[in-house]
Length: 284
Image 1 (cartoon, rainbow, N blue to C red):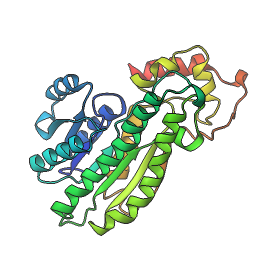
Image 2: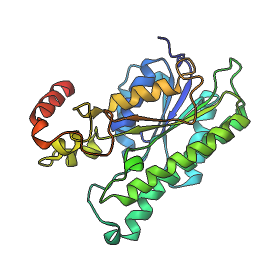
Image 3: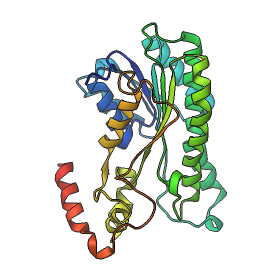
Image 4: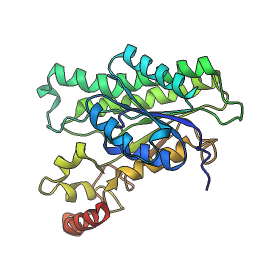
């Protein structure tokens, strides 16, 4: 199926690695013009983009997503370079691996997580909509698309990570509001959330490798496997598509193997070693 993403300008924040990098690859494979944002791993992002066969269709932009001014400047750079922005994916995020109960959380950590995950998405969305207000909608009727990368932590909660869960839960309220605002700028504009569960990325690898972690995670899913970054990226591309998802807005699409937030399998029914072997084979 042609997703009608060829030639569309797609701005992805947090594209230096993990899910963001997979998104860059998927959108580029569809023929999109990709604007890839980085910050802490800026040099690695620039080097990686330069080595891609689609590098002539790519632009790397740098910004601290906690700074509204820097995000605005990055969006303007993308819009001036490509002429407009058709799709924005607010993907940048952090997840402190250390488990801390709320009464043990420092103000510094809480503010950092909320600043990056929630306010960073807020500023990204605002900058994108400001660009859309300047350029107007596309002439071909392919509506603009704004997608937030959420988390099952914002749906089910996550013990020891109240800061992260709250930051991701906030994206739902933001999305439900913006789906009604984007149409004031583009009558066919859409806003959605992609909600990953446990996904194998560098950010989560340390926790997944802990003894018994795979078994605990898989116990909550009917599909007994771990997700890959490309699983999230492909779902995001489908949601961004004016062909596949032209009438889909205000939705949260969970990509987590059917996770329900409760134990579905007894411990002796989960073959963690088999999951790890399959994962290793798929990652080769």
